[in-house]
Image (tube, rainbow, N blue to C red; front, side, top):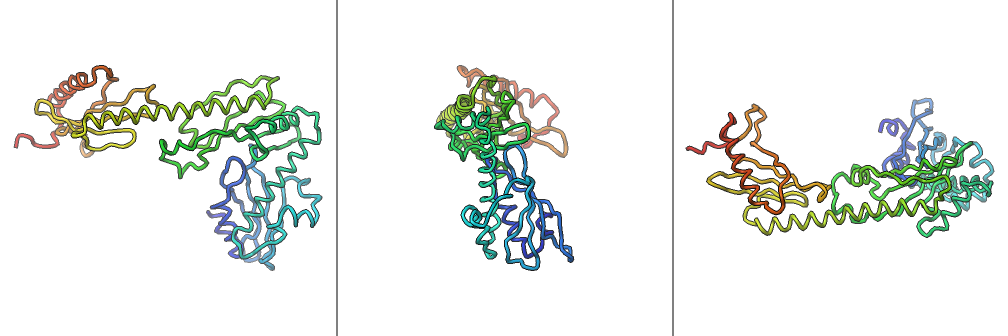
Length: 365
């Protein structure tokens, strides 16, 4: 947070709140801050914010006045026509956090930026509809007639030669944290699935998933969007594909839990430990003790569980990193599980005794 630390202490609390709390746009990315100006004492009272919007980052400058630190900041936008014809009445009505700036509220700048982004989005939609006969304008208004999509679900950007739509897809991910509960804090935006479409090249639609969904769903190949296709048909199609993928994962997880439950019930007395995707069992056969580790991966049942044998007595000889002797088994037949394991344990026992591995325990004393 070097950029924040360099901000003048009078304004630093507002900026710290932006850096830690504010998430703008459909992608909910963290705001980036760049320092660009300072006063005579070297403290920065002017900085640039990089705000996520559509596929780009808006570069807006925030300028505080050190001589009157209780005043609202000024703004300089990267689009000269934005905010150019705004009067005091409009600010009072549409930007109340700016018109009634509260210097004692650390979220004041957050609130102003949130209102400005809403106004910027309205400004872009107005630019889009200046040519009601354009293909992009038709697509946008037709899409909003779909029950799946509202104005809040679409960001619009009108450039010199292209128009961009960033569309939030209604994917039900509410139950995924029950399955994939690791890494959520590091990968926020668990429900974020976005579709980026550019006109006139709408056939190059791009799916943007949050880091969490990318991890969970893997690579998703979008169906082609034909030149004469329309968004109001394509968005529900992609949404259905993603929701089916999520449901398949939930169904697979149910099968995994059922398999683990069967193993735990059948071998209750042998359980060393277990969690939602694995179990470790301690067995003895012909005076040889061994551990069976069963790991059921995310792709189950398409990919079978991984079975690992681990000796209680023997370890590898890679000093000083000696570890218990293990053996990962090939895929086992479900119809002869116990017979297969017994056969593999005998082979593993012979391998352990016949190699130069060191014993974990001196079983002769």
